[in-house]
Length: 241
Image (cartoon, rainbow, N blue to C red):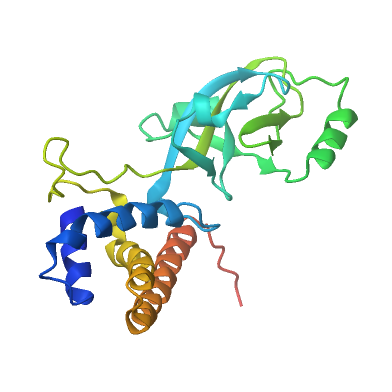
C-alpha cells in the first residue's frame, strides 16, 4: 500500500524532479485534486461502496441520503441502490454484515414514478405488501412505491467520498501515515490523474502523454476488477444439453 508521501516521491522521479523539494506541496495538492476528479466520474469503484440501514413509513416520508446516510454520500449504487429488509430471511441469516434485503427497481424518470403512484393511490401497502420501486429526486431525496402504511427497514448501498489525504497539522510535511482507499487500491491511477495536470503545468507534453497512457491502462484495469466483482455476485444456471 502506498502513502501520500510515496506518491509524491514517485511522481517527482517520473517527472525527473526528484531533487526539487519546492514542488512537493504542489504535487500533494494535485493528488488531492486528482482524488476529487476521480470521485466525480460516472464510473466509481467498489472500494467506495458503503451501506446504511434505516426505518421509514410511507412513500411521502422520503429520506435525504446525504444527511441521513453519510455527509460524504455521492450517490446510490446503480445495481443494488435500495432494498427493503426481508425479516424472515434476516432471521435465517443473522450473522450477515448487512441485513438481508430485497432489491427495489429504480425508476429514473420522475414522471413515470408519479404515474406508478397514481395507479395505487388508494391501495396503501400492508404488512404483506413490500415496495417494489424507488426514485431519486433532486440530488438525494428518495421515495418508494407502492405507498407504505407500516414501518419498514431499508438498506441503502451507496458510494462515498474517500478520506482526504492530509499533511502534518503542525509542520505541513507530507508523512507516510497519510493513506486512503485510493492510495491502497489504485495508487497508479491516482498518480496518473495527478501527473496529467502536473505535466500540463510544467509544459511537458511527453510526460503528459505517458501519464495519459498510464491512466487509460489503470482505469481499464479498475473496470475489469469491478466487473469481476459483479460477476461473482451472480447466480448462473447451467442448462442441460
